[in-house]
Image (tube, rainbow, N blue to C red; front, side, top):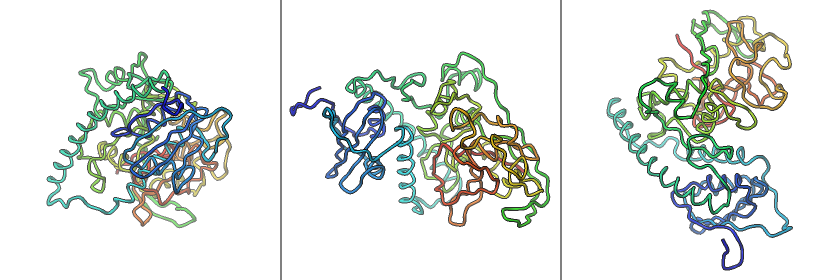
Length: 433
């Protein structure tokens, strides 16, 4: 379309529509141009070139901080202007658009959490009253989400035409563009069990084998914690592998919007699914590639925050392990540094530089050497894991290495994360007594 000034592009409204989606569509369609954004008296721009986000700017910020700022604007207007031929472009942002956007949205969510942390919207007089109120609010939010989804489907389809790209929007599967339709919290597809409902939802025509974790007994007794302090623990059991995609989707299928499994500190109305998880799960159930990796339902469940992990464990009548339990399950009683022994062995676990083609997730239990003396797998690599322990400041402790760490020592700890952190490198497993 041609504007009065002769520039070509499209213009529209962002009301009730995520700026994330507008930027994503521009990258997928391969459009080069400036996305000029206005929110009240604030102005910003995001520059797209070659299917990437190369620059963002606001009045006070440049680069990724500016991208984070515009993504925090609740609504606004936008206009897309094509770039002039041979125009010199600023480059303040690097990396693929998927990771750039996911990092920015993660920071936005953590910023919102910090802004509301400690604020209580109600003081329940009884636990039953709290559960009833949270359930009612969750149902109301679900109805609102459905209305927003219908509006978004219409607006996205319209914008896709304006962008001039053939983009698969709100469909029955994952398009190669990477734009996905939301996965319902509850899969009501009639009788036939979880597997058949999954097959109908994701269009799977071939059967898939479930990787079934076992509950590994960790006997009572002492072990060497961190730098040498002996700690005595009672007996417990731990999942042999990380919770998988199919296990977590089974939880969503069974629970829906039931709030009874939520932690009491969880924000009211927060569900246990998000767009990043939905894209990842859809690719896994569709046996599709995501970030160069062909996924399947036996890959670890990631893009889930601490509250999601807590709710899953509670639904299973289990719990998250403490960091002491996690470390003992990996190190045994001989103070080893790795599940396989004292010395590092290249290729023994899914760590940075291990896989020949890429650095990313692997199917749970794939690396045979990444197995503790008790038989617990993937503690050194693949994905790091949420635990029930906190760092003394209210932040849950994350344990273990992942595909982006070079050394999978079992003493590795990550502190200071928000419990609302969503990351492709963090999964979890459950424990029992």
